[in-house]
Image (cartoon, rainbow, N blue to C red):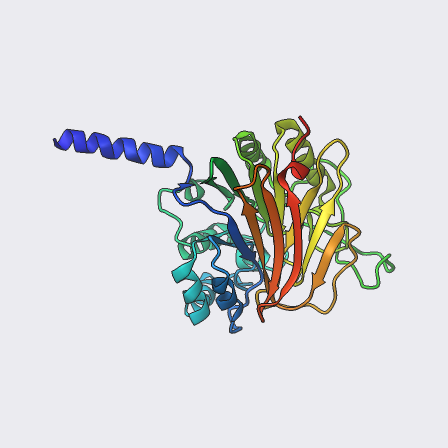
Length: 348
């Protein structure tokens, strides 16, 4: 009897691991956001809870750590954790997360941040990553999740745009094409990296897996034009590499969600011989900025007030609809934009 019980437990664990986090509950409503300063009250989390999402995705700058002292970083996470609004979110909504620079360790930091291993463990502990997770056994915090919905599959891929990223190239010219002074210029050679070879290899395998809708979470914006600040546009060869990888794998249903910039917008990147890539930016759970940068790909926004993003997928339709929304801290809908899944799929 004991041997049979052990066998059943082993088989059960095998299927749990093999399914790579398939959820028993369908996920159709995904809330997300970034840039939550631990010193602020963060009432936005109570607004998120009112919308009863199936999942909340933190997209980075989940706290503002900015330190070489890991005790300081830990204390700032603890300050966020003690907030009643965050406790309300944790109590009601499953949470998954990736990071950006301020919770990684330092503003605009990349692969040379010397405490990235230590900050990773603090990050994973805070978000209750299982001790046997692959995430704990490899460099970086990139990961993926799968959810079954009415016979269809939602894949959520969370990228790590910090651990492997080359240093940014400083903008040193005295004049620029913008009304502000840019910080950075794009790389002009193909050996520059944002994701790193290990993450790229993993990502290709993920995109080859069956899925109907693929939500890609990135701390930095993917779909915008170059604006002199942090974005995939500073790594144009990496940006093109992602597009080429989607074409190579024939991965349908790719939608980006991103953060970082302290305002909300939806960007639409038109791509030759492929479907367009939408990037829904939700940045400003508590942070605000004075202006939005130019973006020829912007089709909605900007929203400069504190807010969160919401994607709702209607799985019951023959061709599912994907509704993208931005809701502000006063529970006002500020953006709504809907597409059909066949608009972001390769033509048969």
